[in-house]
Length: 623
Image 1 (cartoon, rainbow, N blue to C red):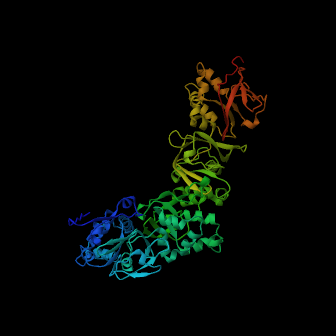
Image 2 (image 1 turned 45 degrees about the horizontal axis):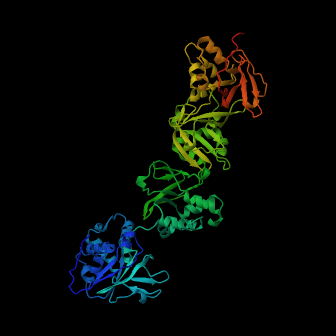
Image 3 (image 1 turned 135 degrees about the vertical axis):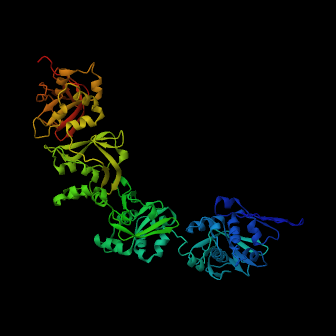
C-alpha cells in the first residue's frame, strides 16, 4: 500500500473523527482520521480500512484515460460512497480469475475499474445522510443511478439489485462528504462487461437461468431455507435439473405439480443434487461421493455414483449438459434428469463394475432379488462382488447360485464399515433345514468375510441399506470355513490339520446330502486349548477331535433340552446337555466332565452348525 503524508502548518488543529464500523474487526479498530484541510483522497489515504479503495483509484489511473485521484482532490464538492477493504475483498472473490486489484492489468480493465469507482461518486453536492430520503434516486458521476432506502439504516441499491449499507456516515472533508459502505456497487455497464466473470451465489445463478425456474420453485417449497443456504453457505457443487427434467420427474412419479410432492421427500431429493466442495468437471472422477441428502439409514448421507467415461453421468440416470457454471460459493452443473433417491438395486445397476452381479440377480427374468432389495421397509447390508470377483468364481461345490447370492445379503441391518467388528451375522441364505447361514466379519486387517473375501469399496449408502463391494464371491460356508476364518478357533484349526491327523478338512467339508454331513461341531476356543495341561497328540488327539463332532445332524440351540443326550459323536461317546433356569447350556462330555459351557451358539454353515465351547471335551478312553 502506498503511504501518503501531509506536513501540517504549525497552527493547524488535528481533528480526529472515530466511527464504529460494522465490517471486519480490522475495520472496527481503524478510525477514520481527518486532518484539517484534508480532501477526500487524503482522508482515504490516512484510513487503513480504505486502503483498497486508494489502491483501486491508483490502479484505475494507470490507464491514460483516467485521473481519478486528481479529480477527487479537486474543489468538488463530492459525495463519495467509499467501499471498505472487506467490500473489495468480497468483490474480488466474485470475479472469476481475479485474485487482487493487480489483475486489472490492462487499459480495458483499468477503465472498467474506473467505471465502477465513479459509480460511487456524486459530483456537485456534499450530501449528508440526513438529507437523503426513502426511495430517492441519485445520479452518479458514472451517469447511472442508485436508489436510496432508509428502511434499515441507510442503504444504496445498485444496477444488479444488490444492497450496500452505510457503516460510517457523514465523514466531512475539505471538498465533500464520505459515507463508508460494506459493498462495492456495480453499474449496469460493468455488469454487461463482466457477464462471464462476475460470479453470483448458487441461488442467484439459478434464479438468473430461465430453464431452472422449477428448481428455484422447488427450493422455496422444500423444508428449511435452502435458497438461503445455497446463497451464503458452501462451497457446494450443485447438479441442477432443468425444467424438462422436473416435469419428467413429476410425471414419472404421478405428481401433478410440485405441491403434491411431500415436503420431506422433495427436500431429500433436492439435497441429493448437492455435494460439498467446489468440484469442477475437471475435478470429477469415476466413483462415489456423498450428497447432502440424509435419506440413508439412520440419517446417513446418500452415495452418488459419478461416471465420467462418456461425459458426466450421475447414478446412470442424469447427464451433465452444461458444466462448470461458477458461483461465488461453488459451481453448478446443469443436468437433464432429476437424480432420484437410490435404493440398493439402483446403485447396483448404476455401477459398471457390478454388471455381473446385476446379471446374476436378474438371470432368467428372476425378480426375487430386485423386488427384495427394493423394499423400503427393511434395511439391508449387501456385500456386492465386483465383476472381477465373478470372473474368478468357478463355483467349486456346485452350490445353487441363488443361495450364493442370498449369502451376500444381511437383512434388518445397515452396517457401515465403522460399525463392523469381529462378529457373525446371519445372511438371507439358508441350509437344507431352512436355517439362515452365518457370515463371519473380521476387521483385523481391512474388512474380510469368511476369511476369503475382502471389502474393496465400503459404505455405498442407499435409502434402504449399505453396499460394500467385495473382491471375491462369498461361497456357501462349511464348518471348516468358520474354523479357519475365525481367529478364536485358530488352535482348533491347528489341531485339525496337525501332522498325523486324518483329513478332517475334507471330511468336514462334505456337502449336505452327502454322508456323513451335516455336522454339529462343538468348537473349543483358543482359551479352551490353552487351559489344557498339554494338547494330546496322535491317536489321542484324533479321539478328542472326533469327540467334538456329531455327524448326520444339524443340531441348533433351539433343539437342545435339559437332560438331552446327543447322538454318538464321531468318536463314539455321547454328550449330555443341561439347561439352568437362566437358559445357560452346559455339556457333560464322554468322560463325565460337566459344566462345559456353550459360549456362542448357532454359527450356521451350509453343511452343519458350530457352537463355541469354553473347555476341550475329553472322551471316555476306557471303552
